[in-house]
Amino acid sequence: MNNLEADLGCRLFVRSRKGVTLTPEGEKLFTHVESAYEQIRLGESELSRSASLQSGNLSIAISEIALHVVMLPILQQYKATYPGIHVQILNHSTPQGIQAVSRGIAEIAVVSTPTEVMKPLSEIKIKSFQEILIAGRLYENLAGKEISLKDLSSYPMISLGRETTSFAFLNKLFASHGMILAPSIEAATTDQILPMVAHDIGLGFVPLTFAGEALESGKVFQVHLRETIPPRHICLIKDKSHPLSAAAAALEQIILSVCHTTD
Image (cartoon, rainbow, N blue to C red; front, side, top):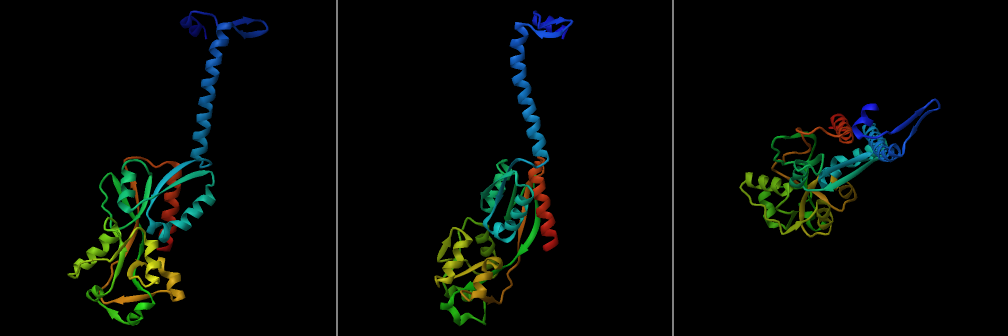
């Protein structure tokens, strides 16, 4: 303390038998030090609460398919376990989700294949899912039959837009059998395909998870193909060059735990 007074060129304390009191100069310095100390204390408290997952922020990118196939029950479990964490979900396509992680906008992304991930990003396949072809009652002549991709050229097709990985996946499937995917309608989201198929606007490919209730109710039926549709995967993407926050690491742990026990 003597060194501090020497550096400042003034007395900060008056020392007596009764104790120590601040000089006017000491009062001025204390006003600033008290404010700084309070900010440090608040910062330490916030970091402690974040580390213990009592509070904090988490930004994640989730594609529409990944949300329905995997993430809804996982998010439910996460929020029930860590109610103090504020979660921001970016509704991105697969390429946008990967870019969000690469740019540091999102800590992790959960998206569907096909993906094109380059270092330092890493990809973990967490769950497989199956695309199926569905049709409405107008096309009941196809029920119970097995048709080829070539036969689909006679029917109106509904697909996601050409910029999506779902279109890229189907386009590759058609091309592998010498066909060109030429949809008559391009939807913005997978959620739009099912009701359009149910209203006989065309045939469409959707993940089996999406079509479950509609298949059971008879609003749509599955059209069986001679060709095998390869499975797709939901993947967890993260940047290995940056450590995850405690909030993101906790979500990753739940994702891997749930998917490894159910897939």
